[in-house]
Image 1 (spheres, rainbow, N blue to C red):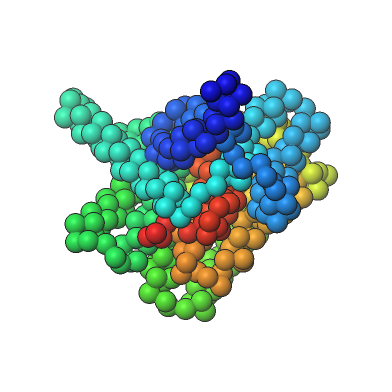
Image 2 (tube, rainbow, N blue to C red; image 1 turned 45 degrees about the vertical axis):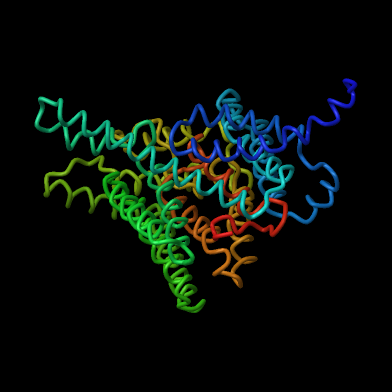
Length: 422
């Protein structure tokens, strides 16, 4: 066999390894960030070698989620041109490379229903392993601690390390949605039903232990959403639930965007908390204060924002002007919608809304079949209201991977039904 023949047969030889690498990546996402980043490089290399390049242009023209993801990243690249701190802007763009890489990977590597199912199974297993590691470390710390307050300190500050509690709770919410759908789908043996039931309970308990209020709330929403879809409570009930949630969110955001009224509201909250013995820099108060500064930061830059490298500096200056001296200058907007508006303006915010809304609207008529992908969108929509998930590698990688798996993937039976029993 000549060298040319061997090279010609290389893609077919390596093709199974591309799927195994994706499974391994899904496993490590909730366990170790750096390992996951290295695996992305491996998967990308395999995708470029063994991927299906035939008709890629036609498939791209038909795949709006991929184009929207790429446009979102490109807007951050353009933002470098008008950012004062180019170094930070470049760092932000590099962190968000997953928005370009992940859709391309899932466009090139064709996955059938069984392979998608295996990827979600790997994520479930990785979440379980990560929880067991964290619980084991917590138990060891408690058993060896001499300080009586060590337990509460560990649970509140260190339990989910190296992950932020809200980020890890986000992982757990998706894991719960996957486990519940498989449990509700039926077709499982008695042992598997017991296993998935115990896993769902562990996910709920561990989410509570993270002490992330946003995470606990979103976990409960995921549970209710999957249960309503699987037991066919009807789209009207889901619309009512979603509409109520959106209304509450909009009212809250509009309220804090009204700078004058927010000042008095924050002052009232701080006064009440001081009477209760709370400090003025509680997480809840800080969020209200941060959100109220966004209109001042965006003044004159509503369309394209101030650039992805300048948000912390501009926010810090407004903190000083408003007298929020207790706020750390490193604090971002703690709301992805507001943070995106600061970075790349209302144009970028509109694109983010399209990324989230388009798949939901497209799959809404087939909710039972696409329950987990739609639950994933709901989880991200809600988490984006409470934190800047797309400003850190942990959140970017998670969002880009599963969004691409659910909505950008090609192959038999696509769009994905990754979490249904094949």
